[in-house]
Length: 129
Image (cartoon, rainbow, N blue to C red; front, side):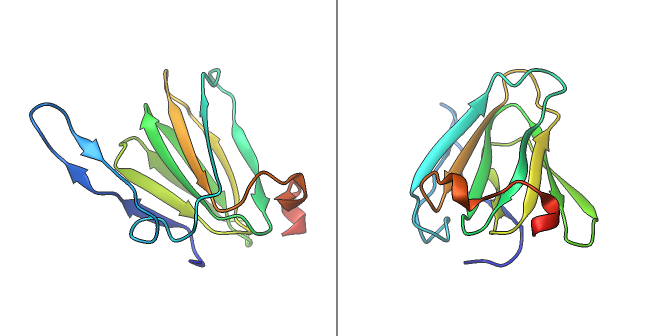
């Protein structure tokens, strides 16, 4: 498990017919993937996320469009990481508060998670970190 938020550059194979990017566990993903989900059709001005996890690690990728991942650090400082290329990703360790905003039209965010869905793993109040 990594301990800090980290931007990842995924392999990009360029071709006249179109580009290809791939992920492989351990090489690119520092955990065994237990769940995959994606968000899409997020209305303008809406946010996703607004929580942290006790145990879950996550990788977020913008498959289409763009959006901002806002990390709120324990000291209250905020860090904005924009995802707008499908060969870039963000690794988010446990106990990291985040939300996603500024979704472009047709934005699709792909989430790879280290754990299956468990409502008990969610931290929904930032003061509980």
